[in-house]
Length: 131
Image 1 (cartoon, rainbow, N blue to C red):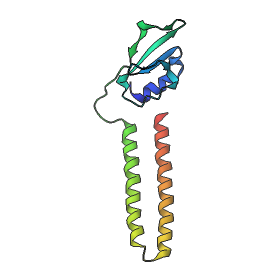
Image 2 (image 1 turned 180 degrees about the horizontal axis):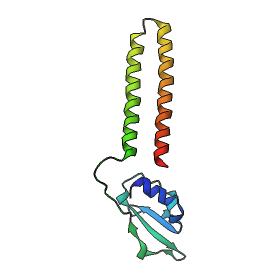
Image 3 (image 1 turned 30 degrees about the vertical axis):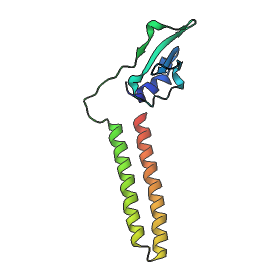
Image 4 (image 1 turned 90 degrees about the horizontal axis):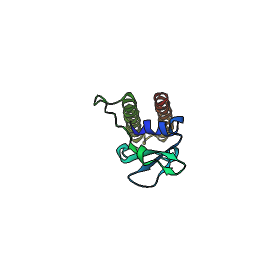
């Protein structure tokens, strides 16, 4: 289970009655955990009226894939790279057109709009993949 899968579990019906703790800390409601650290450092357990059921304590299962990147990570990398390249190219264009201030302003406005559009497209892809 990845951190994202653990977060999905914690926000779903399957986590009702379960508590989670990070690295031996306090037990907290599963939905209040954000799973930002390594998933191997989290434990979960059933909550009973008397407290935590010690017999149900277990770590999250770590499933190893084929060793490759998931489609999500590929799209995320492409999105990050394309945003970087757009900014780099537009920065070069702006620096070359500084001599003509009108062209510089138009290029700067185009750079901002292009960056915003690429960010929106990137976010749309990520949201589609996460569903």
